[in-house]
Every structure is written in C-alpha cells, then in structure tokens.
Image 1 (cartoon, rainbow, N blue to C red):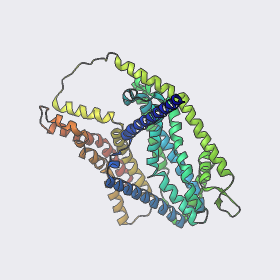
Image 2: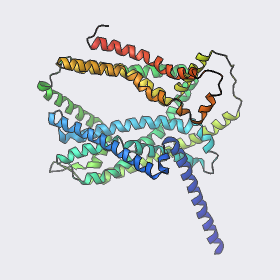
Image 3: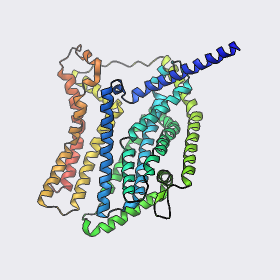
Image 4: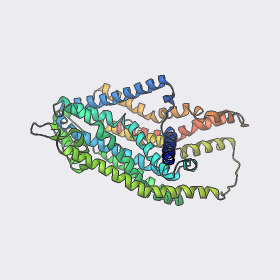
Amino acid sequence: MANEVKVKMKKSSEKQSEFKSFVSVTKMQLKNKVDLSWTKNFKSVIRVVILTLLKSIIVGALAFVMLYVLNLLGIYRAWNTYQVVIVILSLSLILSLISCTFGLTQNLYFSDDNKVLITFPVSANKIFISKIIVYYIYELKRSITFLIPITLACFLMLFINGKISIFVFLWMWVPLLFIIAIPVLVGALLSLPVMGIKILFNKVPALRIIFISVVSVSVISLVVYTILSIPYYVDFNNQILIISDALNNFLRTLEKYLVIEGQLVYLMIGDLNDANQYGISLWIPLRFIVLVGSLALLALLSYLISRPLFLKMVSKTIEKDAGLTKSTKNVKHGKIFTFFNKELKVNIRNINVLGTLAVTYIATPILILLINKIFGAMDLSNLGRVMTCAFNVLLICLPLLATNSLIASMYSKEGRAGYIKKTKPVKPYYPLLAKMSLSVILSIPSIIVSVIVFSITGGLPL
C-alpha cells in the first residue's frame, strides 16, 4: 500500500514537472513573439493596459462615428450593420490566416530556435503544441486593437437601433475566443503546402522572383483598375440613393457568399425573430457545438499531419548543420561599398523592414492616384484645390518620412553589439552614411513615380 502511494506521488510530481517545463517553453517562445518586459513592473503594466485600452477605444469610436455618419447620410441602413460585421470578420480572418500560415511555416519548419528547444526536457509533441498556443495568444493580442473594438462599435450601432439586446455584449466574448483560433489551426494545416513551396523557391530562386512579381503586379493592377473606375464626376447630393443601393447590394452579395462568417456572426447576435430583432434561438447552441467540433477536428488534423513533419524537419535541420558547410571566397571591397552592401543584405533579410519599405514605396503613388481621382470627381473651390495639392505634397514626402523611425533607431537596435563598431578602423561616417543613404536611394523611384502621377492627375505641368 505504501509503495503504491509512493508511485502515485512520484507520477504526480513528474506530471507537475513536465507541466512546468511546458509552461516555461511556451513563455520563452512567447517572449520572442511579444514584448513582455512590461510585466515585470507594476507601473509598466498599468501604462501598457491603459494605452491598449485607449487604442481600442479610439479604434472603436472611429468605427462607430463612421457608421453613424454614413447612416445619417443615408448611404447605408443601420439595421444592416450585421453585414458590416460579416465583412470585418472575414477581412480579419483572412489577414490572420495569411499571417499565421507564413508565421507558422517559418516557426515550425525553418526556425533556428528549434535546435535549442529540442534539447529541453520537454517532448517534441509539447514543443509543437506550445508553438500553436503562442500564435493563438498573439492573435488574441492583435484582435484587441482591431476585430474586437470594431465589432463592439457595430453591435453598439445595432443596439441603439433596437436590433439586438444587451445580452449580446455579454455573450459575444465566448464565441470570439473560439473564432480567433480558426486562422491559427487552419494556418497550421496550410503551412504544409507553403513549406513545400518555400523549399522549391529556395532551390529555384528564379521561381520565387517570378511568383512575387506576378502577384505584386496583379494586386497593383487590380487596385489601380479599381481606382480608375471611379467616375469623373460624382454628385453626392443627387446620387446618394444610387450609392446607397450599390453599397447595400454589395453587402448583400458578400453575405450570400460568406456563409461561414455569417453563421459566426449569427452565433454572437442570434437570429431574427417575429419582433424584427436578433435574439436567442435554438440555433445558437447548435452553431456553438459545430464551431467547437470544427476546431477540435482542425486541432486533431494539425496534430496528426503537421506534427510528424515538424519532428522530421527538426531532425533534418540538426543533421544538416552537423555536416560540412560550403566555404565562399572572401572578396575585398571598398569602404563605402562594404558598408552599403552590409546594410542592403541586413534589410533584405529582415522581412519586417523589407515589407514596411516595400508597402510604403508602392502605396504612395497609388494613394496619390486615389486622392486625385476622388477629389477630381468633386466640384472644388480654390481653397479645396490648394488643400488637395498640399495633401499630395504631404503624401509624396511619405516615403522619406516613413523611414525616419528606422533611421532614428538604427544604432540602438544593435544593442550591446554597438561597441564593436568602435573597433573598426574606419571613420564613423562610413557606416552612418550607409545606413542613411539606403532608404534615400530606395525611396527615389517611389518619389519620381508619385510626382509623375501627381502631375498627370493633379493637373500640374511636368
């Protein structure tokens, strides 16, 4: 009897130890994904919480004001706000799915951290689960400043117009906790084909360049075509009914095709009853059971399909690193070219910096075209034309202004490695000019294209 008690106590302590190790591994990965340094100080906790709430309130207030103004102008009907929620939810899930798919692909199969994590006293299965949990927590964090405040603004609009009860504001949090997990689990499954595509692109770099070029040109062409489709003259006073009908038809069409998102919204607000209000119905628990069951199935498929490949890729990475590395010839370059080449490679390898610069430089001329197309369709006064020109000039300066944050922190980001620069036998202005000139050189084509678009669409001579 005493031996059985000792065995049970030993097993219990082992389980507690394994759980603590699992929590530690999860926290370690979470710190790499989210800045948690503020949790060590109570004042920092209060400051971060207040700033996050303030940001969410601002986003929600702006969304509510926009909906309220559009309703006052008669552009859309307030009782159809649930259709806006469907669109917002769809957009949020799509963006999260893209982010989670590419993020999990890198984190599960190509991350160098896996070589360290696999040596911890935690099974590889738990490491895989911890990575999924980390991305779920990250999606929860992101939803606080986008999905949740906008959804609350839309529900408040419905509540003011008597379409939903206050019960929705209490119940909506439960489905949202499960809805946010959808892109994480689907992304874990989609990471498999994306991993295969990435391996193919790494073996054949030309395919990656062609793919990125085709996708970029297609998206830019679609956006430009949409902007050019704006009529040359828009009379809002006389055409407001036409605009309203077009917008409502568009929302109804989206609701027709976005069936899954529509059912998720109905799960939160209920179904339309005889009083022409959305309330509790028997379909709510049924939808909730289907949602939980679908997530359980996705989790099971991710564990059975993605997990074995994760273990295989980790072992392959370790075996590959154990082999010989191919040496390359060291070529001597000039001082200016050396530092410029170094900054170029560092920024290209950093997907966050590269993505920010690319989006800014590409979006600037498109924004110039959009602004001039919209204001060109209006009958503006002299002051309005001057203000339009001022907006154009401000947007043209955007590529240079957007890089200020990158340039301002270029030394502080290097942290403790900054002292190494002092040991280099060169003048300090060589690395400084390389850091500053890179963003300037990359922004020149965007500024030239923006000025040309401004000259053509803004009615100014070249």
